[in-house]
Image 1 (spheres, rainbow, N blue to C red):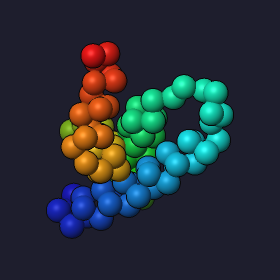
Image 2 (image 1 turned 180 degrees about the vertical axis):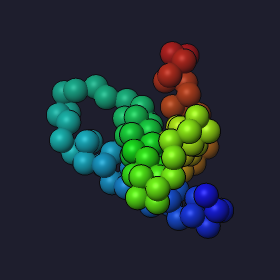
Image 3 (image 1 turned 120 degrees about the vertical axis):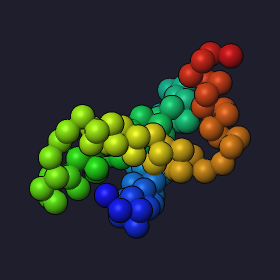
Length: 99
């Protein structure tokens, strides 16, 4: 995967993750207490990992251990980019660790 392909996929997945997160926020009732940073991270993991898997399948790239690791890292990277900003990332880490 070239740098240009990586950046193109990352920007596409982060935009898609942001849109799906907004959709989940609109569907959830106000009575449900959701951590939207965690919802954003989970959707980004699915969209980034799944999107990378689709990219691999369409370009006949084999699913090796390294490529699976790249899929997971792409999910995490798209989550970080879709949360946009250090404050959101810090808040998400605090919510995950429970502090």
